[in-house]
Image (tube, rainbow, N blue to C red; front, side, top):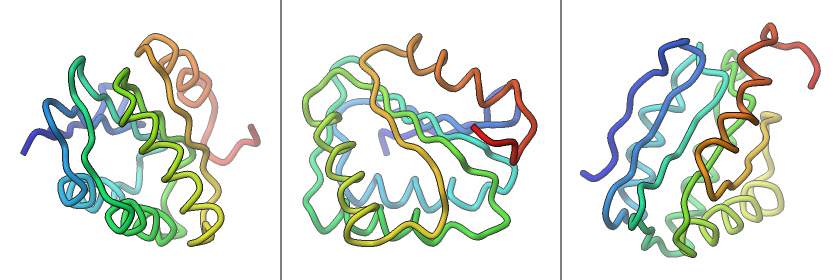
Length: 136
């Protein structure tokens, strides 16, 4: 599977590194693993240069359903998606549409797409530097 997951050194986040072509089933499988991380305040989906997504609407819908059902004890507040391929941006936009409009989030978390890792890290740094549950 071209998705490797690991906790960040600060233990507040989980990184999902995607290489090559990633399909919808792989996204759903990797997401199922990380959505149960109670201590994770953020997810960083990192699509390496040249990585791209081939996922149909049904797979993105399943992904949105997974995240809408994240347990209430979860600390997840931010999801950063980093990738330069058009399919990564499209995935992020479709995911946002499905998770807000069709599925309805039961948890309040933000999702943003970034072209560069440095920008995503800057956005997530605010998350790392504040206590869990403190207003944004």
